[in-house]
Length: 274
Image 1 (cartoon, one colour):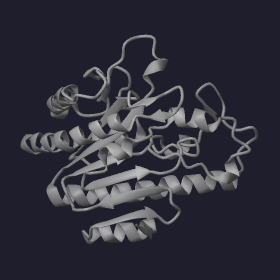
Image 2 (cartoon, rainbow, N blue to C red):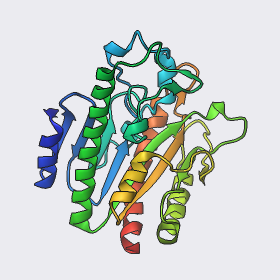
Image 3 (cartoon, one colour):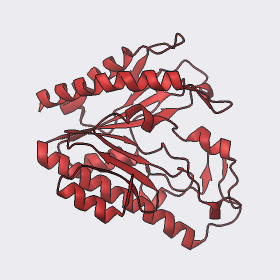
Image 4 (tube, rainbow, N blue to C red):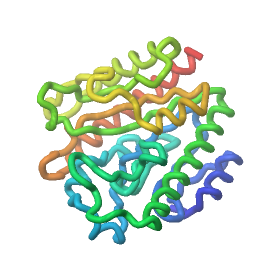
């Protein structure tokens, strides 16, 4: 895999050159096998946490893993365009705006033992900015080339923390244009509900049941591109043991194989609605 600066990635995108690369600081990855009308993203897939932050962090590696979205990139890796974060959201959260992307408190307790030095904050903010510069250029190129872009924004969530039944799949739609794309949201929910997973995992999918699609990645693309639809798609962590961190690869593989079939079908419907 190549190692490229954000500026080099953007240059390749603007010339519609296929490439696969990691950012020069290893903070995110981009694959463009071909310039297709859709993008798959996994902004919370990463768990890198730079060493200069270790001693100052109050959260253990397991506590950080618990709030990250492991394997979400793997579930969409077969698609032609994939962009994913490599760093932990505990360093900076790509699904929050720059002014709020570095946590002071995280899930019930302070994140830092002492105030985070400004040079550390600046380094993380630069990574956040670089990711969005590439995501912007990529979406702009796809929307310009095809007239519209469909983005699958993949996440996961911890189902065991809920005191009620929760769906295997959740689609957040509160920040999309319901009058324009509501039918597409429902059709995507229906397709997710048809996914059959191993071990008798239930096939349930709901809209705005657990999360509502309020993340910055969705908002940023929606506000900046008038013909881009972002489908914020959450899978509950039925593909791992939340209490131990053990991944169930057969469940991850099953989800990925079925998404490989269903995402192109959703793309066809999206294009027919334009």
